[in-house]
Image (cartoon, rainbow, N blue to C red):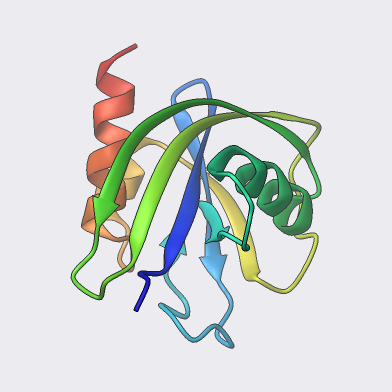
Length: 129
């Protein structure tokens, strides 16, 4: 069986990163904070998936700038993290998330229901600039 692959958008504004609180109706990780993300559709590239997910979830045009890492999770999901630039102000464009919020690294570290592997990626990105 082919593993499930998804992409995660690292969207940054100064020292803060954009995360969405996953809707309670979501099958995976309801109520958890995570980067804007989603599964790849057949024939779609990672960059195309990032652009589509940003448009669908936060109503913004996006540009996939640079892939920074790939994580193989224990549940068999493969996540590709990309630095992403967006145009416009993000808003809840569909029901995938119940809230959007900009987090500093310190806030990410102290917020419950944020995956440690996501925090680790954001910390690594923040330390490079």
